[in-house]
Image (tube, rainbow, N blue to C red; front, side, top):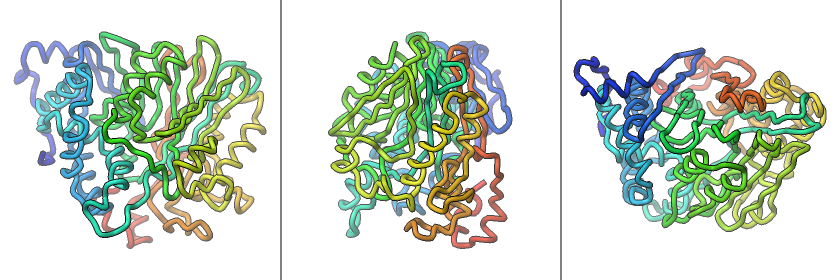
Length: 448
């Protein structure tokens, strides 16, 4: 499709059915977040969603087009075509109808879109991060590049680790700032079938993918990606993409076991994650590390788990990943692996919303041994990091782009404490950054 800045149509140009659908939905803009509530049948909730985020969707596609070409050398449309070719027949009927509804809502609001366009934006992360490294040799003479790298810091705690003995969950997303600037949708979806879900997402995404989910079944779910500098290597094009599996799991799972079973059904290795899951009905928490070949599930009712991209399962770490930096505190993974242990031990027995916020905002660099915002800190700030001794690209506009915390009471009420922007609140000024670091000037006009 051609990215067109939408000019939303008036309700008088909609059908009676569409007007009825929109009367059941809402959007409120709060402190940088787009809080969107949708409900009903797949077609209804999809239309509501597309109509209400059309402006932001069109702008995101404009940016994704240019950044995909600049980062990879292949066009955005190339990956939309691969999504249709590889995964269109793997979308279940309910989600297909919802995605067609999203396309119809976008189109009605002035941002023309098709089912394939909606599939393409939902599949982009998996295809560029997992399919492309495996298959790029078919299109280039160069050696394939690595997969997903350092994305996100997270924790989950329960029992004697928390202030009141119940679950506390926290997560900060790491992303290229040009991408993370669009991950500011809090989508509250009540489908006709399955659980109500509140998720952090981006315009047009039907799964969270950030990832932060709360469900009406009392589940809270987040993750950090598996991988390091070279990332996770396994991918099976014949199976179901991660965004479909995670969405089905969150919509229909009753408990941790059901969620894990659903996620792992037809697992294709795409967007491989260390998942942190809590069930407020039992007070139990779990860490589920899902590779393509190997998976491991750890669980407890008294303690904590954390995520920092450094997978703990030796099989996944050594047989499905390269360059994880697991024990190397010069790397973001190794440094955060140490820092999470320190923080969770320091605050043991006192973890609540405020402590969760404080931990996600932490900028203590364990390699240097003092507070120093960098790519190595839990609140990653790669844009200010010269990256000495780490092998990373200096001053990359990448890092923490949000912070979310939820307690058991929040999970039951489907509420979330969320900050849009860096978890520690430090602002990012794109114009000032590009003046200081003109090597990134190719992002001017796209980086906000």
